Length: 105
Image 1: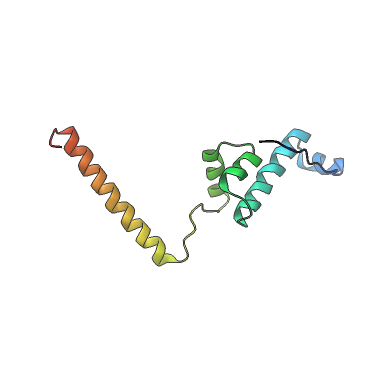
Image 2: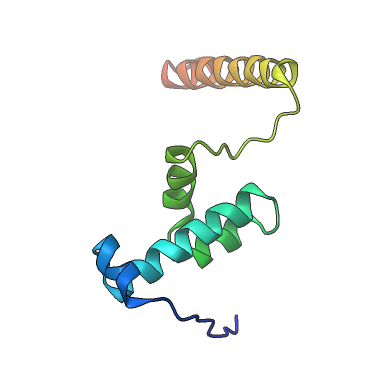
């Protein structure tokens, strides 16, 4: 993937007040820009993780730490239906695994 360099000037006093180095501020800006772009559904989780310069799993945790879910349920009912189907899937898979371990499958 090709890249472009994007930059902007900020007053040095901001870095001093924040006690950030230029590198720390750049990292902070990248992460929170990616968070905002993901939360507003402008670009995908994968692209946001790249922008934040993080592994996808780390970016997902970063989102959660900032109160942003990667699950897009329309309402509580949809969420509960998904939980039930996950529970059924896990139970079925666990039972199959236990049967395999016992030599019954």
